[in-house]
Length: 361
Image (cartoon, rainbow, N blue to C red; front, side):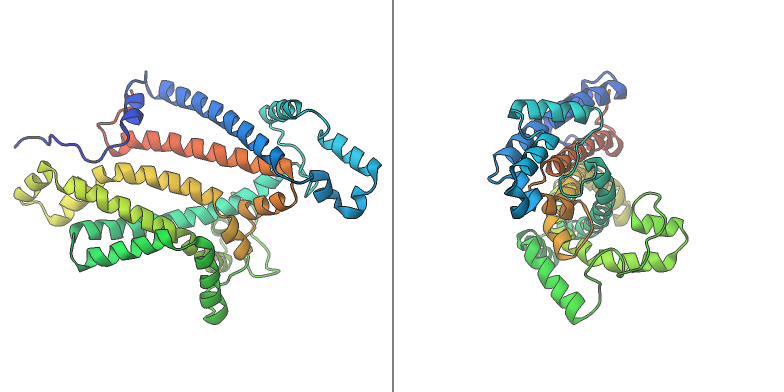
């Protein structure tokens, strides 16, 4: 029986070729790390220019109207944060500090920006992780069912659900879900990670659910899960619709290959054919969209975190933007850029794990 001649849906051709031309995993990762570093530097330049052309005076936003009327106070503030220097000098000063791990001092919290990021990033990562797990489980399941029941009523229903998920504005869904499931029904809590005044477990990873398990505290874990589920479900709504549509298209393409018909002809159980011969090659494009969706969740939680009072990076970025806290805004931009670079690097490595025909050498 002949081997399949048509490959299932693959990663983009240029990405596969760059992986194949490498001189091994080390050389491939080295080249991608260097390219990622240049990308991050480029993003810092764009973010720096954009934050400085936004209308408004950081000194006025930080000091208030009464203090801004004192020229000596304003001069001291500008000198402390280097706002009197030319723009190009400010950028290179910032870049030099960044290379040495110095993200600057937040004008809002009066603390090092890196300290703030270390505090606010873990809750956002935890929220995004729960959302992407929900998205993958539900999206892959719905997409596979839709493909197997093509053009029948389950397929039509799932396509409507996925279209609704990608169409409904996240802020509207967050407000509606908070009103219905928290205020009216009381099924979920809608503020913070824990009930007001309840102490957090000792910090080990910064992820509350993980730290509560490490502390052998099931009650805190249950409370944290009760608080995180609703914002995670809201965030997952768009991603579920996206993954469902990609999974359906990918599975349909794989189902049309000759080796799937050969597997059925050999008498293999339907479940084995789907799990081993359909889903594995179909996962390549799903990994791509899931990785990018995870990066998007990390950088796009501003409104959801504000609505649910989630103490994460999104709320920190929102408050920093209102206060024209340029070092903090730049710090968030750099962290998000690094996250996207790392996610893309992980996706490239996973290609070779999921599909052996894609090699890193």
